Length: 409
Image 1 (tube, rainbow, N blue to C red):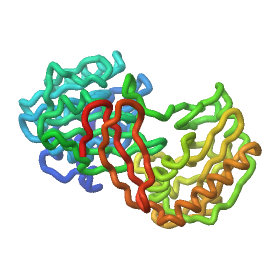
Image 2 (tube, rainbow, N blue to C red):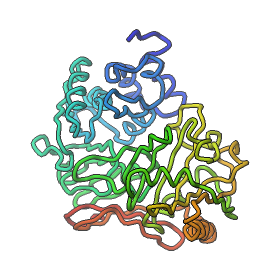
Image 3 (cartoon, rainbow, N blue to C red):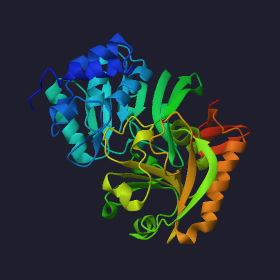
Image 4 (tube, rainbow, N blue to C red):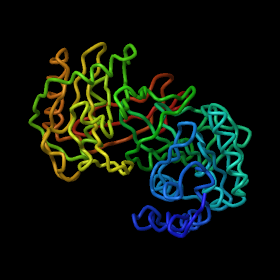
């Protein structure tokens, strides 16, 4: 790959600084020093050094640099710290971490053997001395513990006790947690015997593999084009969801307006608390018109959408074999700015009339109860099961599940 001044580590750094994603001098030096193209060799210079997710040869992806920068800033890394990344991927994040901690121990676990080997080779080429092994990250890496920081780069539905046991007394754990079809990137801090939530922000990560797997299945519906779905509940037989998406014939207006920010944040979490069988559908390109969904590119609140092709997203209920109802924005409001409210509609198959009415009623209830814009997170200990999502008065309370151990307040 021929790297130019226009497309280089320095140009990527300048873009991230302009967006306000890099705030510390240490993070800026790391981004300037680490060549991203070493870790995404199949990408062009323009792809490698732009703020976008890059698809790797094996079908996995390298995270968007602005998200990587956010994670580095949240960790507040210092020289000499020991760091473990679970879900090491291509190794780019590990190289940045190594630059920041210097002589500190940096290690990564990747469940995919080929990707782990690729990461080791790329790190060696970059000159970063980092430990990488293939395996299920649920058990952590006890031989190298304790760690000052543990980072999980894939979404989980519960926090294994092993991760907490391997944190140093004042350590931090950064982990994307799934709540139904929604996610929060949660920063936890260990204080003596307690574990507290420092902050949480919206996120979109691939599900973690192995024993700590996420609670919503992800499927690609290739027959329809570029269409992906996340399903919490029964997936159904092969082809049933695709067939239902092609039969969205009924459109029901909903007397609720909300912004793209409300839709992707508080509303999505609140709906996850109310409905156990949720589905989220995202379509791009020609598939948007094929499914008859409104093109939401102009309303998209997600920074990960870098293509200028049509984009559609909706959330709702899927009950195989033919009951599908999806909440999205009403047609005619596609170009409304993300921060401005626009009215909702329910798109459903003929068999899903009752489901469409329930979704409409839930949207009305969400609006009538104060829109639940406040999200409170606490940590609880439970023996089994995924995270709880419990409505608590006017605010939605999200309880993180820790598998085993004592309750952390």
